[in-house]
Length: 115
Length: 107
Image (tube, rainbow over all chains, first blue to last red; front, side, top):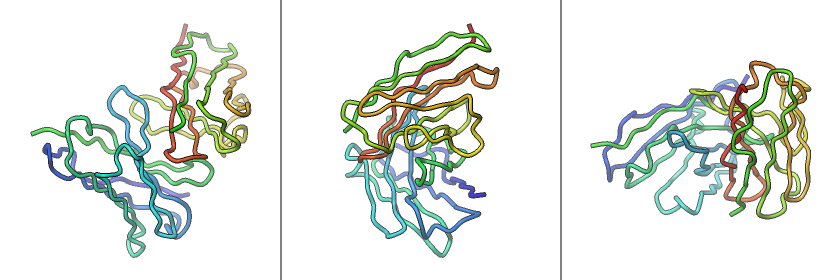
């Protein structure tokens, strides 16, 4: 059974960079698309972007200028960097595998942007 | 960007009732359309992918249908565990987009 686990700081200061990692277990990262999704409190889900097994990336245009998603095959993990954060970036951040839709999700990690 | 409009926003029903949730897309989606269930404090759980295929372990009281711009999730007989928020999603085009959700609550 594939499992995903997000990790990263719970609080990030305004204007700084948010960095999250998703470790994949129970399967190889050398296939599929690996996504980041976020959900502000009380709101719907917002797709951030993905990195594929061929190392290509695809980002949400609304965030494209601020995000980088990368993959580390040696650690079977992928990462998200979001620069110049503001309070609007406060959300639960999920990582998910894309094959039959988003078929495996991490538990999510809450990130609060606050000074 | 494809906008997904879910209706109704809230559905108040009793256990044993039939639930019909709708999702309308701003542009045609051919194949890659999904539904998720989310409970408070949990990650979304995939229910349906490819418009009508149940995800592994999903009971057959859940069914998906539709084509083009109109899609439906039907829960044939609500069980207590089914009261939650349901999201539709298209993953055919980028950016992937989600609807705003339908809350199925106990009447």
